[in-house]
Length: 333
Image: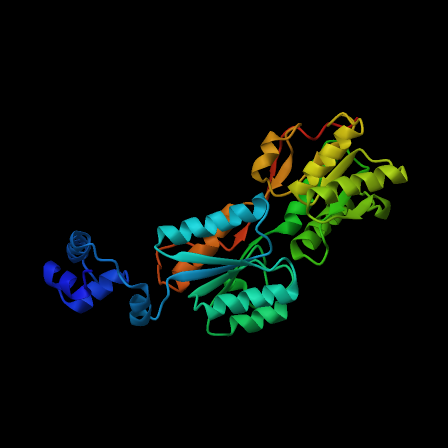
């Protein structure tokens, strides 16, 4: 097996220069870097990751904690993070917290124990206070899809309040006044902010928030179906349903069709997130775009910018939601 000494000799450079190339140090000319890389290729040299880590005080690994692994939302987020990290020659270590406080803490402790250079966190159960305290430790912590005052420089977030507002406004603009709302679990910040935006849109248009037309779901298909069943069993009158994410919207649509609704003529439905399947539902789902893949890319770029000193990367910390108008809303006379 070739050694770093043989690479140094073949390339005609010092051991320190070879080490700088291996650690992607900017203080190496393109010509010298090319010579070293060519020598490594000719000799079949593979850098020892442990030796690299000791030399650079970096493991070139980034930890990622997400609430769940299932579903298109988290898949898009993780894909964005991994693609950005891999393009920069970094690797990700992923663990889950399942929206449980203790399991999220265990996940973070695991990633810290693996000597990750930084950790990207999507947390739904940990308190702001815990995360602020955590950010004061040795390992840099970055939050995706969450905003915390005091950690704003480490957060990538969506304006969920505005998202809830524009979803409701889209229905009102199409003549709907009796609007049911299926929320996600209210301990989750994105869910509660979307609900606040919904209530404000109603107020701004002189409409009352009706507790009879409110249901707390689970951010899964079952929540949408159960919510629509709840409204239907109670005999409440409504012409439209807002679902706080697309999975619940798809469950509500399935339940509606199974019970004789003509969509969207009998019932208009709008979702939130704009995950990949929304364009293939029938009717195609009108929704609010939540660019979680872009947010994943941006969280990784923030790590590359701050931790690995790639200062040419531009950073966007707050993303704005937009309406994706398709076929699931009808005009109410």
